[in-house]
Length: 352
Image 1 (tube, rainbow, N blue to C red):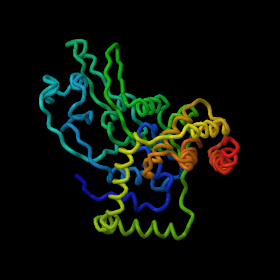
Image 2 (spheres, rainbow, N blue to C red):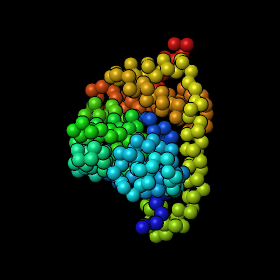
Image 3 (cartoon, rainbow, N blue to C red):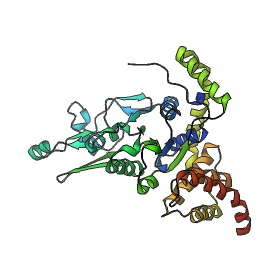
Image 4 (spheres, rainbow, N blue to C red):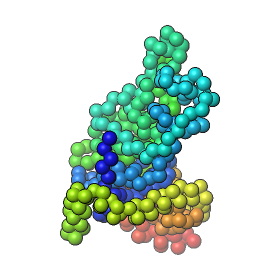
């Protein structure tokens, strides 16, 4: 097993929007994931793996393919075909649990639907009348991070499955009248290079947040990237220890924000602000409104507050609207969101 240290999340130079979007989805998985658009070599995969490395460990049943908690529903255990699991025959039997780090499950571009969702053993069902389920990647990603590089190159129906599970927190497999469901609550992170092709607008809209990143243009920052990377490669342990205090602080803030989020309140006037944002930029449907609200509340929790402020809504709109603005290329969308933000104060004063 490779125990080599992971490059520290807090040591990544720049890309602040990407790091923030990842943190917000960890705090609140109901944001339905984040799509990171941009060129290669901009620390996308590094950021995902390094963030998972500093997150608090989770408790799971030992060797459980569904990453279940001790008190998980017994029907899931009854549908699992693993004979060595004592809960299959006696759901009330005591179980051994362990604590382990958050997993980052990577989904390959060529993954089939069965590889993603799992498969039902129809022969077992027909012969013995028992469900036997072979878990897929969604089961493995439960309570973790599902990382999909080049998501725009996946088959559309596979992307649909991922987004459905990310939104509902459940994976359901139906084959020839045999059905099986298991929890699949994970943080979905998709990356893509727009030059290699676009996602359909219907799929774009299903991602909660979307950011566009580029290589850093400041010479000092580029030098810092080179220096830090070389230092890490030469002595990973020493480099990681240097950033340990800041890493622990980020992990502490994430845990605090998770506890604080249910207590966050939002004034009703800000709901009208969200609606105005979406109407002004021509967003189809209502998913954008809901995501901005959830993101604003999550931002408030991340900043240690129980009350959403105007700044939270503005920042949430920048993360949730770019890929939802109708009939415009992404770069124009980003500029439009910025312009809309600048003229918001005047509209708010008029509304007041």
